[in-house]
Amino acid sequence: MLGTFPEKLSGNAVIALPVYINTNICFYKKYKDRLFCLLFGNEEYKDNVLSLYNALCHTSHTNTEDIQIYTIDDVIYIKMKNDVSILLDSFLYLWEQQSTFNPNMPIRGFMYFGKMYDRYIIENSLNIYGMMLIKLPTPRYTVLYNGVEEQPGVMQLKLSDSFINPDCSGDFEWTANMVNLNDGKNDDLLNNCRPLKDYMTLINEIRKNCKTMEFESAVDAVVTYCIEHDVLKTFLLKHRAEVKDVCITEYNEKSFVDGIRAEGRAEGQNEKGLAVYRNLRKRGFSKEDALVIADISPDLVVDED
Image 1 (spheres, helix red, strand yellow):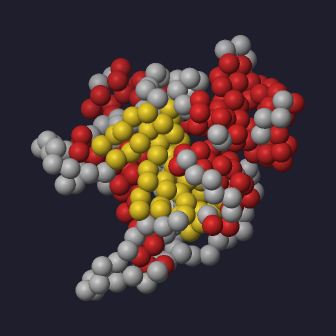
Image 2 (image 1 turned 90 degrees about the vertical axis):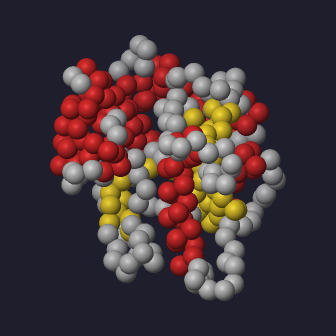
């Protein structure tokens, strides 16, 4: 079941939300939304959600009330969310923004959809042990890539690529469709979704300014530039401080992760990675996040925790 939402805490975009689980216990976690989630996963900006949906699905829906935001609140990376899920026309969509390429997106999506289906089954009082076939919304999983490393315009990642024993039968498959948002890769998509195009304009301008400015100054200058040039103007005028805070947090998080990974590679992947993993766990990171940051195999931590 889902618990009730407590009031917003002090600080930009930092809130306490219930973790959805299968028992009647409700825990709370603090997290920050990434900029992508603020723009496309917020009830206040459902027009943005609808615009992105229409652009990705080549549809022309006009009623935002048809959209049910279905994001799972306890699925986070480090301390920030980068995923948005919606339920529309009996399709269940998951959009995940990524600034680094990750070949493990299919298994992450598979696990995420398991949580969403669990929630859907309970909310709709469906009996998975009965004689009648239950009906579930059809899944659609899209990874929106905007990193600096060169990647193709579109790539389909498959869960079967992770199987220890190769299986080409297709009997057990799960896919993640990665769409590249960088210049020249999917310009039609950006042109059909003004909020997404503006989002990428802001990101690209920050990257450009960072070549000659400190990051915090670069973000502040870009926000001013975007407002003056009608790029996310209404959104930025209302959430300027929040956007600046989120961008800086994302940058610091990435620098932290990159630094730890580089340190681990320099001093011996397994031993140093395991030490990093233990340190992160002591600091309150989840097992999954700690494994990703430490860049080590789960086999190394079987006897941990």
